[in-house]
Image (cartoon, rainbow, N blue to C red; front, side, top):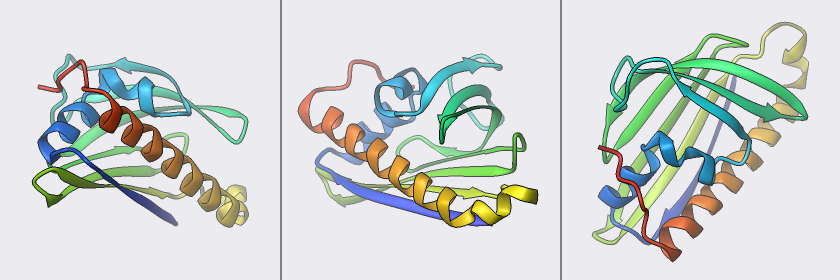
Length: 151
């Protein structure tokens, strides 16, 4: 099992960060490897919502169907997919001050089989990916007002 996390401080209130971050219509603006996102259940985002995403990782296209397993609009989002391998993504928002939020992305992946020997490389790649996504999110939220709310 690969368990990787990254975090960043964003100078915005937790509610603002959650409204933008948990609005999947904004995902393309800050997820660097996202190629497409399709709602399989009608929006808005809720527990048991399902989405299909296509991403690129290590030069390979990956498609996964995620189900939202936990959601609190200004606190956390957790989602899981079984294919192409079991993966769980968690996004956690914690207030540092009234105007500052710590955002953490945590991914747990079980590549299994012959991919398991690539664990350290996959972990390093995911860590870099999460860090880059968080830097993009920080720039977006600290430099401009989000145009779309989540709920």
